[in-house]
Length: 452
Image 1 (cartoon, helix red, strand yellow):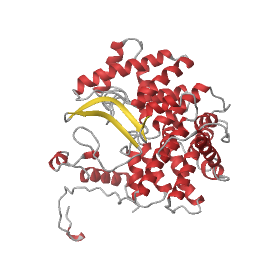
Image 2: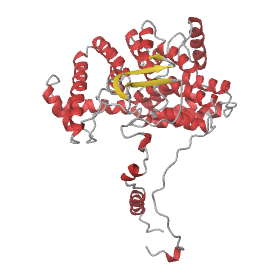
Image 3: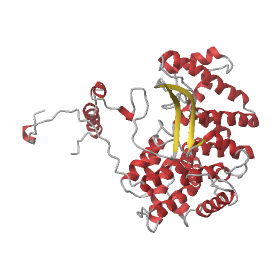
Image 4: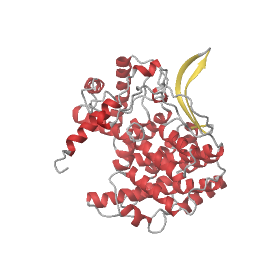
């Protein structure tokens, strides 16, 4: 055993995995299997019913699907109307969370009471920051959130109680504590990995979720009203997006098994961490950083077009063939979240003196849509999705890149909670998809008879 070439053996195992796990893609069509739970047009296959939210991308006239500007509804209310209604408030996220959980917008008194409940639940258990977050800091804040969520199971006197009252209390605590856990996780990372001063602010009552996030992340705890407003809008538009997105579907799948809230949320966090889901805005920012290095004149549309075409030709940036932040599985004419966020990105860019950079994003969005349409001859219009502008907004807010995806999670925990409760209230069957076996049946041979 002393002469065991470990690396060589592992390399052999890798090749076995690649060969054994390879599926002929033509079989998906032959057996009419919806790969990725999508039909031939990329639309999601119906797997459940929900009242929590609705995503609308087309209307039907005389049996024909006609694309329309995208619409997003939370419990029946269009998100654009909600954002407009919250224009004089920094508590839009709190109102949205109340709406998602309880099905209707709160009265003024109900909102004040709900805000107080979240404030009372925001503080982490005694010594939790020291014993859990600081003791084993991580470079990835999504893993920090997962670790914290799973550890909170041990602090819960009755973690497996699936009564709606208990699950609601668990969800409310997670909604309140996510900003604190993510912020403390980042401060620990900053201190132990970047050798910076350790700054730990306590969450402050009388401040909204958006205000507390900025206060917890910034050493001086200061922020402008516009900064808090823009972040609040970000939290609102990311709070929910139909039951079909990967992380919310994960919530339904885990909840259908009868598992505890902490396990379900930890799994959803794992889903959201993926670069094809919540991590997409990081790719947009990295792409724009690369663009700025290669495009010298931001006003030269030919130069921008040449760069973007190199991405589509798999020659530029990460050679994936993608222009990140463009296109969506459901929306075609427009992503309503991107439309909303673009307006606030423009306002913030004016406050920060970054109008030229906003203009660059605007040009890239327009040129990219044209190039993708020509190259792919796609049947639907290609538009910017919410990730296209969110990373830019977070950068203007001086949020560290490590916190981009956790901000998504801080917002989406509201939607996950609503869907978990919906799954439990309806006491649905365990979600069990089917897979078609396309391998071959083999005859067993004793070890001494295997000559391969």
